[in-house]
Length: 340
Ligand SMILES: Nc1ncnc2c1ncn2[C@@H]1O[C@H](COP(=O)(O)OP(=O)(O)OP(=O)(O)O)[C@@H](O)[C@H]1O
Ligand code: SF4
Ligand SMILES: [Mg+2]
Image 1 (cartoon, rainbow, N blue to C red):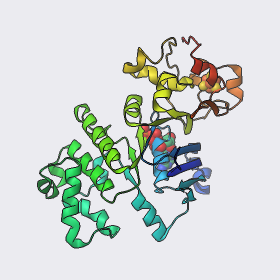
Image 2 (image 1 turned 90 degrees about the horizontal axis):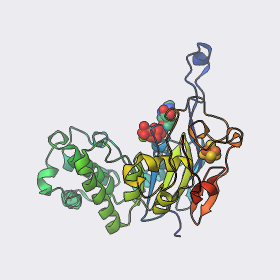
Image 3 (image 1 turned 120 degrees about the horizontal axis):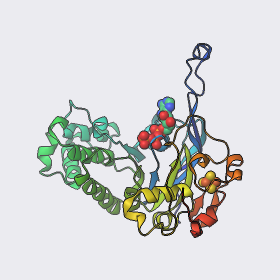
């Protein structure tokens, strides 16, 4: 496989780690939250890695660290093999030109007081990539690329005049106009009407084919991950439980949690989990009182005494598939009839 372009290397992120003496004395300190616990993710150039997980599993935290909007408590971010975790000043600015982020809510990326054209020209000016005389042409070309036509009309419009789908295309255009090598897309279609989601996803795929841009695609929807990604990483309570090639992960998941997610996605039910019948017991993921041993054990239908005591190792269960479960091999072999 190619040399990775971006790597998150054993990241740890603890929020509310040090609430301060006053908050502690008054008993009003928020409990610490381990939003990332030894998270390792590797992005290969021109490919898409999807990060899938329930709300609160740490997906956005990983994305924000990947773009250095936040610095991790421990661990490293590597860009083309170089440690960029502590970059500042001009070097940080140069990094940001290479690694861009697209947010769930396109309004976050667009200033309502600027026309679309002004918003798109801004990053070009900031990074001094295009002379003033060339801005209009660059903006129109990018609007064409995201299929907003006639481009000139869109360039002169304000965000308030546009639909959610059009705004998200503009947010994508704004991230891509400076030709980044990597785009971190944080649930970019989840706020859009279902009927226009596939259009935006196809647009992103088309742009990737043409430009070779690398995506880290964050979603809570496994079927979206499968559609968009070459590889999928499944996160749960701040940790990556399983990672592997998208199709392998769907057809022969080695972690019980991945299997439960597959079962929850109706279109996979008939094919992917043939013999296992799994229902997810217990509450949704919560950071309150992270359990000992395997963090998934309170909800795992396969939990054994060892799971409550020992953190499972990351086991290699395929050429590039790893799963953090004591019984990963058996789960992958699908010899287990799981009922609850
Ligand atoms: N700035 C912060 N301060 C304190 N806790 C935080 C902060 N940001 C995130 N968290 C906590 O870290 C955990 C992971 O949050 P994160 O936003 O990364 O999850 P997520 O997987 O993106 O969830 P969602 O699907 O809801 O977007 C959560 O428990 C969240 O409450
Ligand atoms: S280690 Fe045990 S509790 Fe954790 S996922 Fe595997 S079987 Fe379930
Ligand atoms: Mg999030």
